[in-house]
Amino acid sequence: MLPNLESISTRLKLRHFRLLIAIDDHGSLLKAADAVGISQPGATKALQEIEDAIGNALYVRTNRGLRPNELGHCATRYARLIYQDVTHLREEIGGILDGHGGRLAVGTIMGAVPLLTDHLTQLLERQPAIRVELVEDTSAHLLDLLDNGRLEMAICRTSVSPRPDVYDDHRISDEQLAVVANVGHPLVSGPARLSDLADSTWIVYAANMPMRRYLEQEFQNQGLRFPTSLIETTSAFSTLALLQRNPAFVALLSTEVANVLSRTRTTTMLPIALPARSEPYYLVRRSDRTLSPIAESFWHGMVNSP
Image 1 (cartoon, helix red, strand yellow):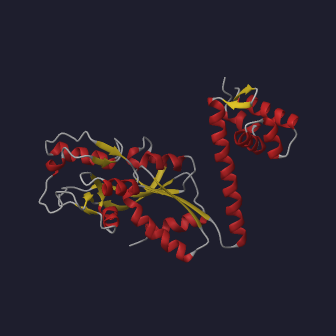
Image 2 (tube, rainbow, N blue to C red; image 1 turned 30 degrees about the vertical axis):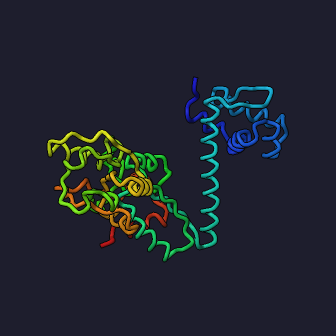
Image 3 (spheres, one colour; image 1 turned 120 degrees about the vertical axis):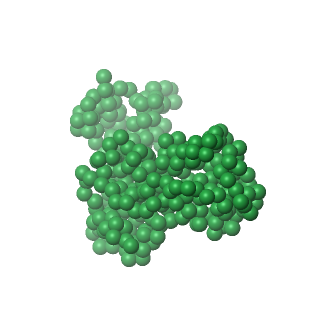
């Protein structure tokens, strides 16, 4: 039976996480004990404490040392995350004490990357010693990272969440969309219609994401079958690489991202009119948490930006 969270959090210490990482790095308890500066009996006892706290064995004991089972792999992965967070904690405290540091963790969907990077550039011009973690992903994953405390804020859409009421959000912008392709695409010179691309390979977001839903709705409104040849990605760089490599591929992107990619002179917006805009995106934070001073300043800077 799996112990409850209170029991696990009370019994596990940072030294336990250090040991899990060392076992993973060295493959044996003896070498792991040396790495963390304890005796082998001490390491054996600490490993037993870890498995007792979790209520399950984490390793298979073999002649060659310890081999993690599925639970062992899981525990080690989280041990690394926890220890990394403690490292970030120390670095951020050190920066604050030195009077020039701090850390901002912020996420964004692809369409808002240009807007966010403009604001981050302005922030770093004012406070160049700040460390910034920037995560680009889908709205659903960004909200998960907000929930887990990995991000302080994100530009995304709360409509994908079953609990949008747990967030504070501020409308940032309406998203205008464009169909983007290689400059060698046969429809570059136009005129063109969406029906001309019904058999094309499309680079799209995953199903149920707002931009994907918009594209599906546009095909339906025009009485067209939605394309079956799809490549799903949230990465602007992957989209650019695919469009550069394949002149017949097309992608639905925000006009802001399309304009950034067009500076490479390898992609362009096709002359296809899209009758509506996608769902707006928002600057989002958890309503039940206090932002760090840097994040609070950044939030108000974006909210009050013209």
